[in-house]
Length: 252
View 1 (tube, one colour):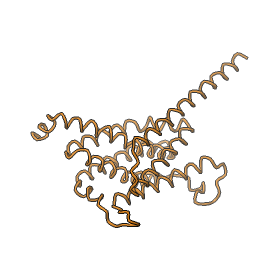
View 2 (cartoon, rainbow, N blue to C red):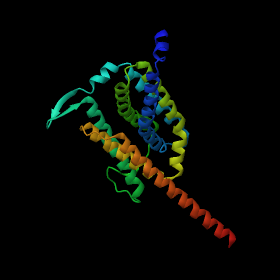
View 3 (cartoon, rainbow, N blue to C red):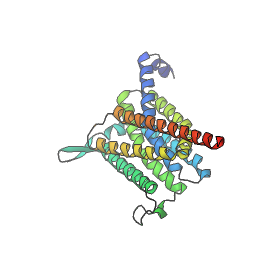
View 4 (cartoon, helix red, strand yellow):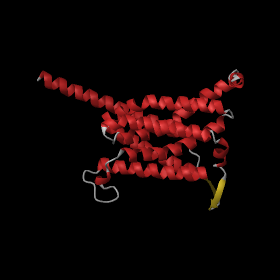
């Protein structure tokens, strides 16, 4: 306890803690988007429980990985080479997670835009989602995002207590934002398509990073923020037109 008090007497530790919390929250947006879209496909009575369980699993995974930091660091060591490109376990996990996100987002977009889905791998009969299947898919992406999150944390500070506090705070913020975000997405169909587009972009970014192409996260989130701002303007425009139509009908 005394060592912990001494640690937080250093202003540099507070700076690293605040910076890391911001980074963890930003990285958690990807995870939260996926959880929100996936749980909205469940029966209404199961959605809140699935979100809490999915985010709870994310916290447990992150804390477990923090307890094995030495092993996590080794995941960045190349295990084989292909065409003069070294691949580590982290790279393989990012590629697998990225491919899953691209497949999942493409499948959902297909169902959204095709009025009569053909009986193929996107057959509408497979559209139903069970609670267990949702949790399984959330857990799969939790693993990918948790490893990325912890490796980021290890690169920013050597202090485990700082990492633990940052992870817990970020996940608690995810928990607070989960239901409002999911309700907002469910209430605005165009937002669903935008969010699926974000998941496609995130998936491609994970694949690129797995192949050694470093994509600055700032560019990705700036593009997401710009797209969200444009969609916000579109929503305001549609609301204004709807009010004008209603006012016109009432006056006539």
